[in-house]
Image (cartoon, rainbow, N blue to C red; front, side, top):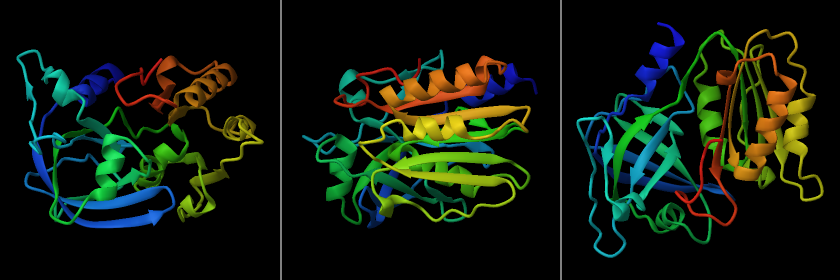
Length: 268
């Protein structure tokens, strides 16, 4: 399968429209609440996906109703503006194919649809799942993962599910030292943690740029972080590794300071 065929396969939309039920809730660090869900329908999370994510659909705050979208004949999601405001993308943190259960880590904020929901969630509460997806699959390229606190679940999941011979470097900036997740370094994995420091705002970018990746001919960059930080990382790695093709860089704006999801572009 060539890269064009692979991209078409990955990007093809599939709607699950499953009903999720809360099984457990746990505050696992100063920045995250972990929620365990069961699903009333099978969920496909391909083992080869890099940083897989879920499209979660939250109930209407006024009516409590969950309104699922549909696909039209052109493979486009048909969803009204009101319902669109209730959809959020969240990384898969853990997934059990046998029990059809998975875990999602919700970042703790004073406001925001998903964050507020997670802080008030109770066992038995329900939300919707439109589908699961990923933009990338593992290849022979050395994987370089870069992110701030918002992408910790995605990066940790990916490192914990690396194919046996896959090489990977990770550069992760968190809000608090207690947000650091125990991840085993090995022959094929190197993890670099940074705790946010207002006196050193460029430490994540500097860490990525100072890494010696010269022994790896093929690199695949994936990143998820705040919009302005994503812009800096994207520009820096593209300039340093200008010999790589454009499809070797996938740096996404997971969020933007002062904006709700849907009010900004996630990609360049």
